[in-house]
Length: 393
Image 1 (cartoon, rainbow, N blue to C red):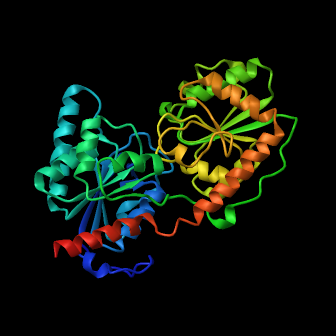
Image 2: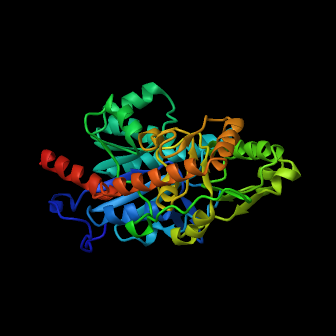
Image 3: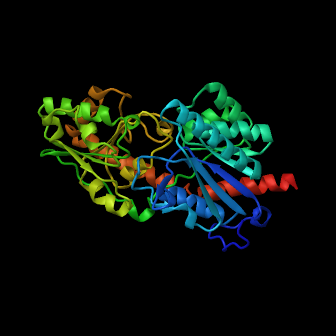
């Protein structure tokens, strides 16, 4: 543990009582080994940096991700007060799985045993393992509820029932957690949208080639194959469009190969963009933002699209329904239904009045939401640690 801490930039509070607390954060992915260093997404790095300023030590433990996501570029080991522990992924031939599983269990057991408090990113198999260890070793823990694909309802109920608090990514997940945990709060989202980014929606077009935009990981659970299948319908119907997809795609040929050449010519793949300011021109050029994900907490890209005045077409998974309202600030699409995606795109581009209505409602929605984002995620955790520390004393 480091013997000195720099002064925190977070708002005030009785933080002296938690200066020596060791916190273990158990992630559910996104840890990359790059040039000998363990790296993660900048938002995870910012959270750990802020929490590390307030407590004695933070250890972030997660599976190593083999995808080499270029957005995971923040070296966690260079952050004062923060350690990182990368575990071998649980995949491959059975002997390798067994060895990696036993090694990971031993490492997580050691970290849980030495921690004063454990913070679990949920859902995730690693977090489920850590929750059981916490109960075995009687270590207090909290839950950061980020998605709805839980391994089992029984495990979910058991983990949240013993959690000291839960911070949920949106109102729908908050309601799910409240059935088991007494202290539940909506977490302040980690995103790059600031008041200066919120702009008035532009006047809708009524002709020309339509610009459709998707931003996020290019993977199955994000619904990107549904989006490509929807593009086939749009091409069949003779609608002029280009679909720009921005995100990490580990296998570009494999991703596009099921699509016909006539559909592929409408698709523009763009490498992940790490800085939000560099994404702004893509949003500014878009006529619609399409997000067909199968599983979410609440995606920050919807905040970005609302701030930049783009009409949204989205599924209502996770906590999306707690913010988005069908035909008020978005058009709702069914999960895994490419034709429904295409139909909603066709409805939107044929109706400039609807485009304007959704864009302005999104503008008003993000403006209201930003007024409530007063306490950073790390501060929400630290406040509860301070209360627990007083109870321990």
